[in-house]
Length: 157
Image (cartoon, helix red, strand yellow):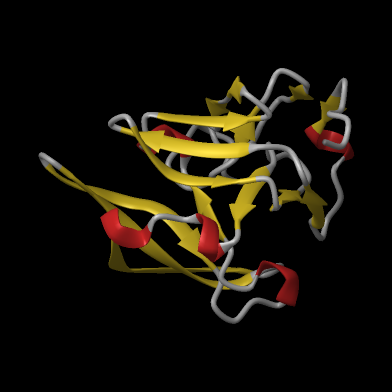
């Protein structure tokens, strides 16, 4: 496994975002089940945002995911599509997203999860903290420092 960073400031991340291949173990869990796990992920680093982690589609359990009509557009990544999560009590809206026709081919069909909409997400065994807000999907690890965009009053940063 490649060494983990010791400290990073989101204010040193670039615009447009940088995409990095990583071999750190990534995992998403909900209701005691693994939704996604990989050691072949991508992380996207963008100024003011905690990293977003992307899973190859073959490493995602789509059996509990249902296509969502939601679509968004990012000037750096392209048009995103979303999925809801089926649980025993209903649907959790727009749990994850992917770019089927991205601007940068490396992220084509890779899936990223909103950490705050599932039970737990992990990077190299560390349980991460979700980025605040309802739009951005960054994962905050102990080595990533803010302040972070996403909380109340930060959308215009």
